[in-house]
Image 1: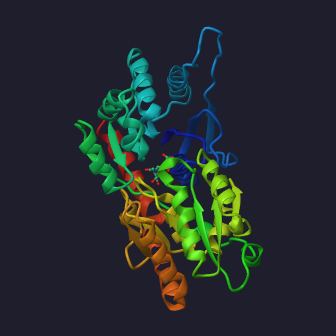
Image 2: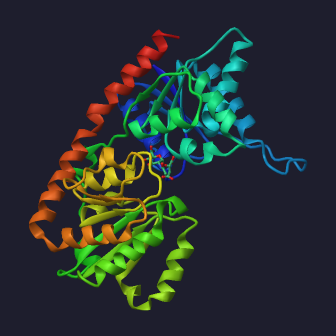
Length: 375
Ligand code: GMT
């Protein structure tokens, strides 16, 4: 089967899921064509079954904004024709499902067509997709897709609540390849913390929904009870909030390490004691799953699909969005009790195994086969 994957190339969760899925399919012998405006961050282009098609933008002085969606749908149309693709898989409704629909219309003009799967990831439904500028186009392109999947039950419910959806939505959860954690070279824990210190970690794109200011508040409270360090991985618009916090709390400067975007994420997750995720919205929380796969329990909000991943009292603790006091108290409780910490680290890893690629990939394959059969 030849599959075209349309996704964001950045470190955002939807691009990571699309890339990991495509690479796993390629390993199984599928021919996978990635269409994006840049090489996806984790894509290993050395696999001969993987192709990358960069969407080229033609600049012209008349354009105040470059018409990316037109270039994207033209590229989709060209790749489908050239490589005789069997199926398109759009990750994130905006603009991928919409552009794929346009490409399908172009193909139909020539008596051809191709089945389209759209996977909804989160903010395409709960945040950006709600905006009047996009809402109708998002609803339209979901309804025009041949198969629609969402990454959690919570996101499915939100989609049905916010949009007039005529399609069935199949939940296929995100996944993790636990084998990636097997041959990992361990980082030295003492590069980040003293022997008697615990390590907290937060990984995100530092957008407002991630509430990084709450990560800092939680850390400040916890640090006054438990000797600890905080590692923050990622870059984004709320980086400024971190700088402001450090200016206001100079005594914490040498306790907080800002690593930016890192390639060795798993190595650093492995040495952490607790992952903080106080998000306002989170359709799934792939970052939490990655932490769990590294055996790191999660203290999180109960937003969106997080409770489907992080189980209260088993793999970590959850509190209402904004309840930083509860999240800090849970963290103190966890980090002060070695037995509880060891148990939750074990539970976190076991929970991650339930979302293993081995379990989820066959569901994607079955869905592809059914989509093509029903087309
Ligand atoms: O977290 C982000 O803001 C990035 C966003 C994306 O689309 O790249 O992540 C969303 O998709 C991920 C993969 O399915 C989910 O794990 C994240 O929970 C979801 N983010 C939100 O819903 C805010």
